[in-house]
Image (tube, rainbow, N blue to C red; front, side, top):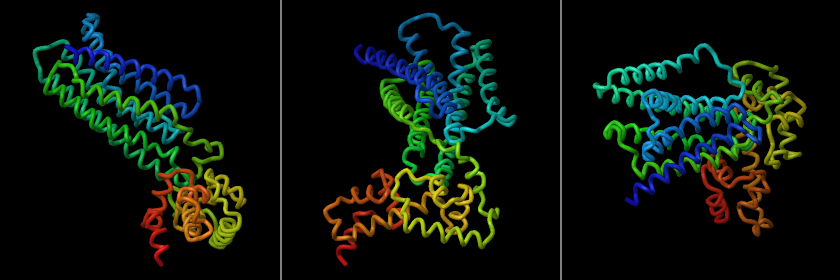
Length: 364
């Protein structure tokens, strides 16, 4: 008797949390990532209906007639679709709907047809199984597609940002993995135990995911804050380095100038350094500087800048006058502002951790 009561209050907590998060993202008081937060807010609202239905059933409130249930089932099916479009706008705020996007309505229309047919003829249980299979297909497709977009986004932001911790959307990647596992579990559970409520464990896991979603969604900064400075032009111009933007001689001149600025002025010590701010120092358009870095050094902006930061860290670690400083203090002094980003970047460039480098260097 105790477990059903706990499960009931847990379901109410989950539903209330999703509604609150949905309201906060739709109202978007910080005015960041407007379109992405709008679609993510709708996604959370649709997601909440899974538990609204359970609230009615466990409360024995008999207002769920056939039409209402069909409507709820249909909007639940749209949940992965709105999640996908939130990812689309997080990774590309300038996205425009195209005629080809109408293909995303195919599965929802097929699902709706199945729901209507089920209401007209309830004797065939296989329809329920087919509908749950459609749910699995829909969830898997949009989860995988969203994951691929996040991976592309990570490469894209390295064209113009020297630190990506706040804008790499790792939290959405973790949500995708969690939802993938949870969706499979729920769908398989529904197939094996038709018309039975989800168990307590599933709801506890769901609540943990929701808290994680809320914490990260509400603190997500504006990803393309420098779009006013034509960041989208930087990305489009540098999708391929085959396009020649400047002459070979001009390229060499800009390489020399850039190396001089990086060595003398050391702009990489600024953790907020972007392609736009560095382009101002070199006195060239951002897309030209990106071309110079890509074609002249065969690197993206992120790697180009962080190589200088890593070299600065290495020189300070070898400096006996800096022995009183911790490795992280040296990292912050060199332009890094995140422990995770520092350790990952250092190991990627040097093939060893900062601690391993310091230990091997001190033994020489």
